[in-house]
Structures are given as C-alpha cells and as structure tokens.
Amino acid sequence: MGSIDDEILLGAQEDAKEVAFIQNYMGVENRELFTEEDIYYCLDVLLEHLDTLSDKADADGFIDIDTEEIAKHIQKKAKKEGMGPYELDALILLIDAELEYNEQQEG
Image (cartoon, rainbow, N blue to C red; front, top):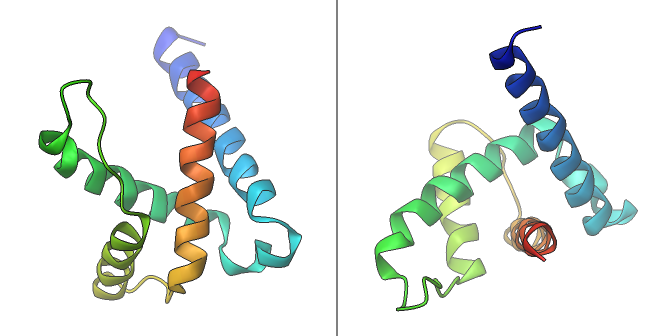
C-alpha cells in the first residue's frame, strides 16, 4: 500500500474512532438518534461552521462556541439538504461529544 493509501486508511480509522466516542458519550438511550452517516454529516456541517467563526477568535485563538446556535445552523442546513430531521437537544449533545473528543485529543 502506498503512502496516500496509508493516510486514507489512517484517516478512516480515526474517523471511526471519533464516531464511536460520540456514540458512547451520548449513551445507549440516545444511540438511535443518529446513524453513523448522520454523525458524519453533522460533523462536516459543524466543522464548516466553525471555519466561518475562525475570524472571531480572541488573541489566544479561542472561539466562543454557542452550541445551541450551531445546533440550529445544523438543523437548518440539514433540512435544506434533505437530512434529518434532528432534534435540537440531540444536536447539542452531539456537539458537546465532539468538543469533548477534541479536548481529549489535545490533552
């Protein structure tokens, strides 16, 4: 396998690990709220949205994240693109899980 193939495989493994973390974070009682495809979709929209907020970072590079505002953004985009529907509280939980995952990866 070439280095590009290795990078793709490693990326896919990391993505799967992230999705598993999010599913575990959300708990068994919330697992049926999102399929793996839903989680990948929501994460893509979340990351796109966070990129648009990068110009609002403070001097230390931190961005004030309003999870409810981001969840509403995901709901709106998902509806437009034929995904979901996703409950606001479920999206907030998913966003919290993603933020926790990233914090653990940095620490």
